[in-house]
Length: 396
Image 1 (tube, rainbow, N blue to C red):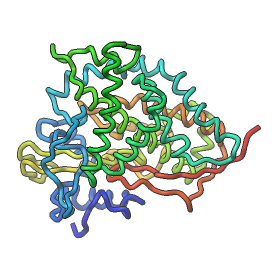
Image 2 (tube, rainbow, N blue to C red; image 1 turned 180 degrees about the vertical axis):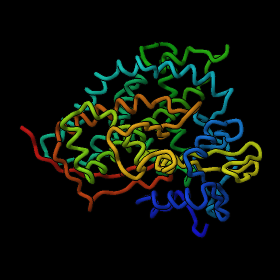
Image 3 (cartoon, rainbow, N blue to C red; image 1 turned 60 degrees about the vertical axis):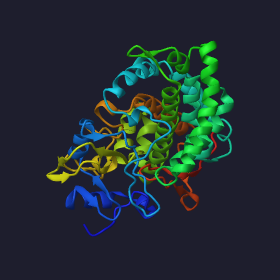
Image 4 (cartoon, helix red, strand yellow; image 1 turned 90 degrees about the vertical axis):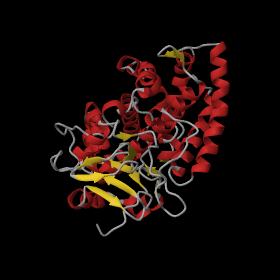
């Protein structure tokens, strides 16, 4: 292949899908010799990688990290190792424990709280006729939900939002900066954890601090890693899902009109939003031994970037993959992963997106995007907007 695929290339972020199509058609298992990592772009190959963690490990990191020469770093010691960076069997017991906080019943019970938080965030701008969606709503909303679930002081929300946003921006390119942010976050979390050990409440941290995994108490490090994952992956997924959804509705106003006319279609729209323009475009894996994927031999110890964003546009899996189809049948997208690493918070993200779209479209059914002042997020395989100014008619 005659081009250099680089997930940190800002030109790629504007519209990666033509490049993905070329990868799938020309070299679906592609080795970037200059940067020393592999790229997997077809749906079935991506799924094969996800389904075989004993061959394609998460333990070396979930992002392709580049050194000062632009080459992939293949071995790095992380100060926190969240679930998403664990393989079975270590992953299994801890996931089973924290999964208790994300049962369908427990998530459904959160809808009233989530709606209240959404309405509170909309209130300051609903009569202004304009807002900047990321800073005034989409960036704060999921962090507020997660802070509430964790039982953290509302005063921590601003700090959590800033840390999550900065970590995403530094992902893969500023390891030292990321670690400083994580250490600061751990300092705050340590105070919360120590308090919950003495004064348990009805929140996730209280449940976890006194729990055991296979007969051993859960460590503070595991707790910090879980909260770190929840804050970063949980908040950024919903934030970027919402900005991507508004861009799609802006380009295809018939989708917006259909959702305003019949809000019961919003859940199926959310599934198509995440397929059509996935907030998480890809994750990294490393080979534990020599592997054959798509007819290509990959040596042991290699870094792979598996492209969910490309897999979700694969014409072998989806009819008219480059078309947004509300009510798409057999929408087996993998925007939330698959198998043992299927996103625990997927149903929370779905509920947050449903509630947010219901409330936002109620207030701003005729929204317009100021494209000139919009700014795309440049954060590797995370796809969304850093700024999305909207204007709308004030409703009395």
